[in-house]
Amino acid sequence: MDEAQVPEPPELHQAVSFGLPLDAFDNLIRAAADIDALWWGRTALFEAVMTRDHPAALRLVAAGADPWRPQMNGWSPGRLNLAGPEPGLFGPVPAGVGLTEQEREAVRRSGRLIGTLADLEFDGMSIACVAEIDAAEAIRRLGGRPFEDDDFDRTVGVTDVAGGCVVAQRAGYTAAAPGVLALLTAGTRGYGMYANPKSGNQGDSFRDGVMLGSDLHPGGGQAAPDDPADEVLRIYLYAHQALAYCCDAAGVEPSDARAFTGPPDAMVRIADIELWPL
Image 1: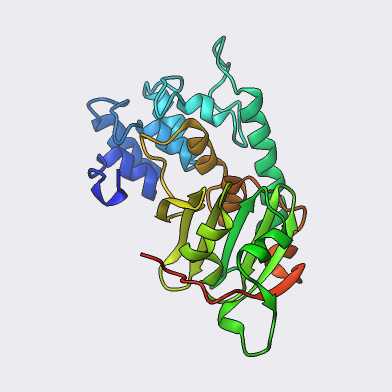
Image 2: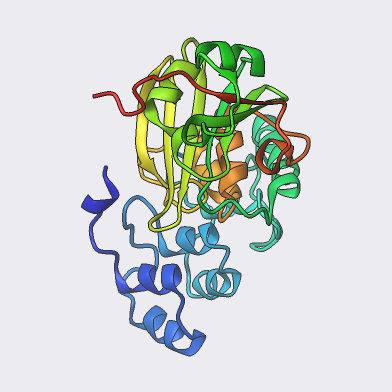
């Protein structure tokens, strides 16, 4: 479902999402007919976990909200919280509830990626994170040739990283253009982002040269009821961490920030391809 079509959230969910003084929040809790009412597939408690508003979460639980109620593709608020900074927030974990080894590795990977890429300045930058191809293959696919001083509009940096490569442009949208991502992701997958200074981060997901999603919000979106379980976890883990989100979504893991801050492995001018094919 497009976020523009999402129904208006109830007051309790809004209070969690946008913040409210705790005394006013307590009044909403007391007035709630159903403390575990669902909106867009999640309870207010789930929303509190997603936004890491732990004081609100504890107030909801004290009022009767169930932290172990499955929702959002099997995630309960309590199980999702096990992936966060305060896994003991809701007390003892029921038998049979916990993170899988794959989910625990996702948590560990998020710690590494965020530790590497947090606090970087990337406003105005475009990137394409691509799995399973190296910088040389990316350059070949893009018809790259040596950089010249007057080629800035189509000049990108290309860098090898664990799991694939990163194509980046310090100022401009070229690296994340659909025509570029379509070429780069033939036979593989990738995630592009343009950090638009006017409208925020704009993400695109590609697989096998085909766009799977556009105008996405890496590091700032809301989980949708039909999102797969791994995407719900990714949205939770990478809140406000757009670069790290893009890398994880593509399946690459830079060991340092050089792919984004420079110097890249190569600076090339890409061929005169159609950046915005119909």
